Length: 419
Image (cartoon, rainbow, N blue to C red; front, top):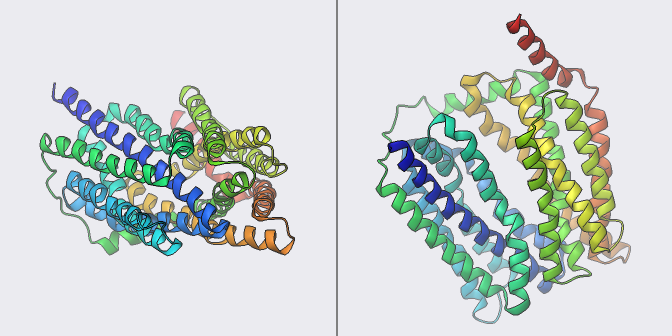
C-alpha cells in the first residue's frame, strides 16, 4: 500500500514537471523568436541559449551535493519558485514597450541559476519514492516529460504567437512554476525528509570520480570525442531557428520543430521495445554519419518539407548515439564509482554545447555578412559544415583501437563469466 501511495506521489510530481517543461519550452521558443525579430542576429539568439544552459552545467555538481545533504523537495520548491523571478523580470521590462537584449539575458541568467537546483533533487526524489523495479518505468516517464518542451511547446507557442505576443507565453510559464511548487509541496507533506548521511569529503569524491573517468584511455577518449560531437550537434540545434525564421513565420517554425523533434520519440520507442544487443561502436558511428548527412540536407534549400524530413532523421539518430555512448562508457566504469564518474562525464561531454552556443551564431552572422547571403544562409552553411565534420569524426572514431576495446573487453568478460 505504501509503495502504491508513493507511486501516486511520483505521478503528481511528474505531472508538475511535465507542465513546467512545457512552460519552459514556451519561454525558450518565444524568446528566440523575439530576439531574432528585434536584432536579426543568430549570435544574439545563441547568447540567450548559452546563458540559459551555462549555469545548469557549472552548478550541476554542487547542486547534486546539496541534494544529498538537504531536503530535496524543499530544494525543488526553491528552485522552481525562485526561477520564476527571472521570467517576471523580463515580463516587467516588456511592460514598458519592449525588453532589451541585456535585460533578457539578465532574466534568463537569474532563472537558470535557480533552475539548476531542480534536476539533481528531482532525480534523487524519484529514487526516494520508488522501488528498484519501478525505476525503468519512471525513467521513461521522466524522459517523456523532458521531451515535452521539444514535442509540444514549439507548435503550441507558434499557435499562440499567431494570436498574441510573447508576454502571453511568459505569463503561462510563470503559472507553471507555481503549479509545480504546489505539486512538490503536496508530495513533501506526505513524505518524510531523508535523514542526512555522512558523506566522504567532497574533494576526495571528486578525485575518485576523475580517476574513474581517466584511468581507462578508451573511456576518456570517447568522452572527449563526445564533447566534440555535442559541439557539432549544438551548432545544428542553435542555428535551426534562425535558418527557418529567415523565410517563414513563428507558426511554421513551431510546427517544424515539433516534426523534427518527433524523430526522438519514434527512435526512443523503438529502442525501448527492441534495444541494441551488439555492435555498439558500429551503431554509434553509423548513427553519427546519418546525423551528419541529415545536417547537410537540412541546410541545402529553404524548403520546409525537406527541412522537416532532414530534421526528423537528425533527431531520430540521437537516441541511438546516446544509447551506444552510454553503454560503452557505463560498462567500463566500476559500479561503486558510477555516480561520481557521471558528474564529470556530464560536465565534459556538454562543454561542446557551450562552445557551439558561443561560436555558431557568430560564425553564421559573419558568413552571412561576408558573402552577402543573409543570416539564414549563413546558418545553413555552418550547419552543413558541422554535418560534414561530424561524419568525418565518426569515420575516424571507428578504427581507434582503445575505443574498440571498450566493447570487446566487456564482451570477453561476459563470455568468460558465462563459461
